[in-house]
Image 1 (cartoon, helix red, strand yellow):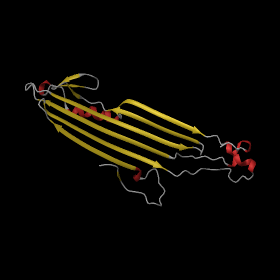
Image 2: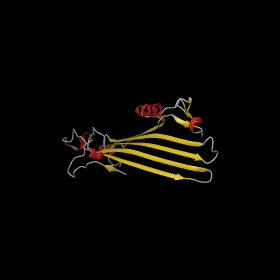
Image 3: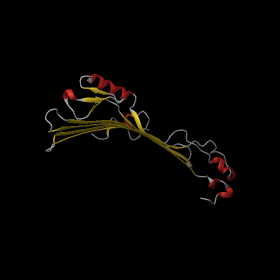
Image 4: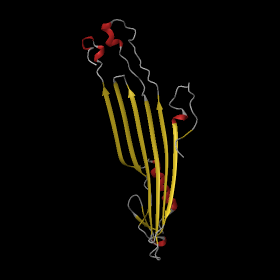
Length: 219
């Protein structure tokens, strides 16, 4: 399911930041299961849930001195500014990956390898033309991982071992589904543990020389 939107704006309606049509959602589920002479089972499940928010508006510049007359006052007359951003967008994606490999040998104890990954990516983008000549663009990205209790090693059943986010090894007898669930929920509440954060700010300014009489030959 990709780019699902709820509601919509009429053609003559001015877009507003709170419009539900600014939001779109996507969900993908993939499962593959393979086997070979070494592996009795190789089960992979990949789930992705993303939410996008995008808002853009038609820029209306404020020109407080537009009524001034005279060529010498052209520079002052052309002074203008924009109080609100042109556009803002936000994207968040949760990805849950789980891989279980069951080996044919040995039979006792059973060797089963489990790979669990839960990532949360968030992206922010802002565009703002303060004037026609002064423009600012900002974007940031945060990549987080959800901490959870994971199976450690390849042993299964009573021989299985698990590792907590703090690195502590616990046995199958000490492990509980309730504790694993609470650990994951607490990580989600804290937006995960940030592994990478990057941001970029671009500022461009074009000198308004064409409004200065002595320099109007410069373009």
